[in-house]
Length: 62
Image (cartoon, rainbow, N blue to C red; front, side, top):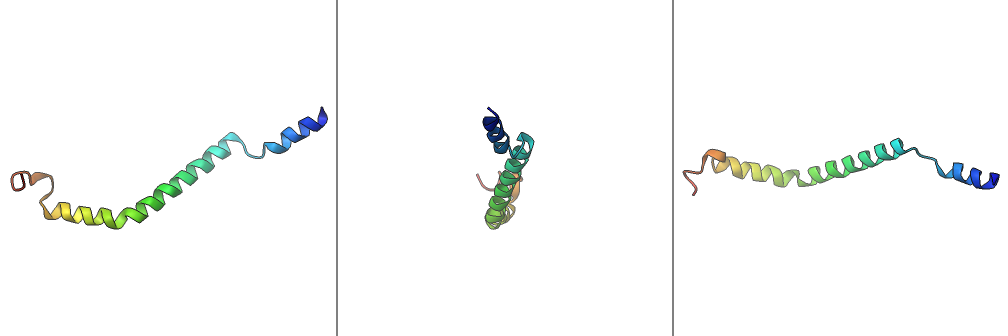
């Protein structure tokens, strides 16, 4: 019985809160990497959007 308890204690090295923070940090890192990777394309799209007149250009470009 005591052997089973000691095994159970060794297994719980990380609390639920620590695991949640680790997952949040990992997800944040993935999102940051994706934004950095896509940043040149986003800037290009914004430049095209500004050249065509933005949201008020519906009269010129049907």
